[in-house]
Amino acid sequence: MTTTSEPTSAHEATADGTIEIVRVSVPRRTFRSELRAIKIVWRRELIRFKNDRLRILTSLVQPFLFLFVLGAGLQTIASAGTHGVNLKTFIYPGILCMVVMFTAMFSAASIVWDREFGFLREMMVAPVRRSSIVIGKCLGGATVAAFQGVVVLAIAGLVHVPYNLGLILGVLGLQLLLAFTITAFGLCVAIRIKQMQSFMGVMQMIVMPMYFISGALFPAAGLPGWLTVLNRLDPLAYAVDPMRRLVFSHLNITPAARRVLDPGLTWWSWRVPALLEAAVVLVIGVVLLGVAIVEFSATE
Amino acid sequence: MTDSQKLDSNQPAIEVSGLIKRFGDFEAVKGVDFEVGQAEVFGFLGPNGAGKSTTINMLCTLLKPTAGRATVAGHDVVRERDDVRRHIGLVFQDPTLDGYLTAAQNLQLHAELYGVPSHLVAPRMEQVLKMVGLWDRKDGTVSAFSGGMRRRLEIARGLMHSPRVLFLDEPTIGLDPQTRRSIWGYIRELQQREEITIFMTTHYMDEAEWCDRIAIMDKGQIVALDSPETLKAGIGTDRVTIQTDDNEAAIIAIKDQFGVEAKVVEGAVTFGVPGGEQFVPRLFAELELPIRGVSVSRPSLDDVFMSFTGSTIRDTEEDPSNHRNRVMMQMMGGRR
Image (cartoon, rainbow over all chains, first blue to last red):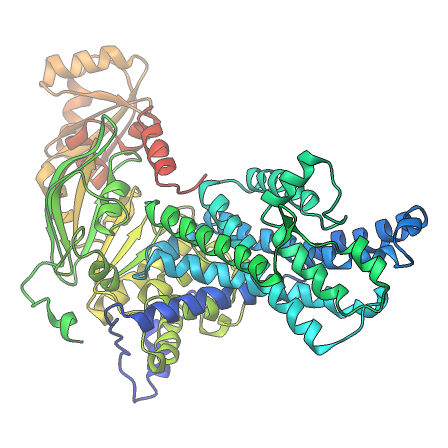
């Protein structure tokens, strides 16, 4: 290393005879400078994700296990009730949601990492709004999660789901939306929690039940009363249902099968339109992001 | 540009008056006053828990003072928080680099967060990296850097936006002596080249010698403030250390025969007298106790510290009041 090199000569080389000292003056905070801050925080999440190949792989393990192992394993006993539709095809929309959920959860955890490794301080002392940091983090987490979603989307053919442009765009949109909301939720939790282990524990405790209750792995009709109530209260159900609707509308199956497998989410027997469902997810996401911003701004 | 000229050359870079910080009923900083001139290297000296970090955190706008006021680069740390932040660079005691990113990416991120004009980012980056001797490692991932390299990179990052004041909280803690010396070389060079004010804390006495002026802080108060030379000259005595078989008896005998207050420091009897070298022969002739060893030293900052606080910095560190510091760190949500 060049610890002992003469700084003077090193500097002359910098100057090239033209630059003496590059004096920088930091302008006052503006809307544009906040956008720049959001962008760099977002980009950092992407760079880190790209460098972390292990994470790309590990977050795919669970969805693939569910899809191929559970799907194939239960196929034999489920075939009677699925009207000839493969069980893997049935749970595929749920898996499209699942991959996004888990990646988004991990993305939110990065704020806990940043705190543990001190980097959070670097961002906290910068002359930018705390909200810019939170928004950048949230968008970064959502983008990363959507990337993972694309991987699962790419294997649609393996579970007999056609590649159709409308379907792909719709799924992507829903995945982004879900990723945004889950990241915002994760950030709310992550800002309060100082240790990684506790964060992971808390997230598992909240996210797993939410996932099971959402109806990602079973049709959300004809359930026991208590489960129906929980299902309708579960925000995730409002992402799973439109996802399934979208995928099933592109499948070539009998109307009877469609009725059983894709009954749709109802409020007092009124079938909630897909757009309203998406709006519910969006509103929850925005509210959670607001909560995260308020919480983060309050920390010293 | 306009407001960076706000600070005229006579105005101090840092002005602090009556600054107080309380955590619950514990008063960490008990009303301090001082000024730091422009382009000065100012050292804040004291044991852990003395209130150094609390003071520096208030000046960096990371903590709100309970009372009193402070301006940094001409801006009030409470009312003009963002203006202060735009004009200061920070190097924390604990590392705050992103180990997954390269050196250049870390600096880029900093420049974007601070709104450094895009066309200046690359030349400024080149300059600060060359200044700390890391230009050839700019594309190296930070997690592979040694402790000294990381600290240098943090200093470079703190300079990316040309701050008026650079705050260094224990910049050399945990580094080996050689790396510490080279870090100091960078700091001094930097101060001359960029005419930047440097405010730093340390509990290494030998490092305080590098500062233009130092403030000694103990138990939340500034007990001395001057240049290292003046402080040492102000002691007016040399330090004599003797080894005896009976320290208690020696202390009493020295008090009786010479009228000098001695005390036991690290197992040896220590006291200060003017003209220590001339005193030693008298000591041997007149003291009716066997002396097994003797040493005389010119006053050091350790002695200055001792004369103002009544203990050496190491003694103080053993003090249970240390845990205050930890409590404070937790409140800050800092390290864990």
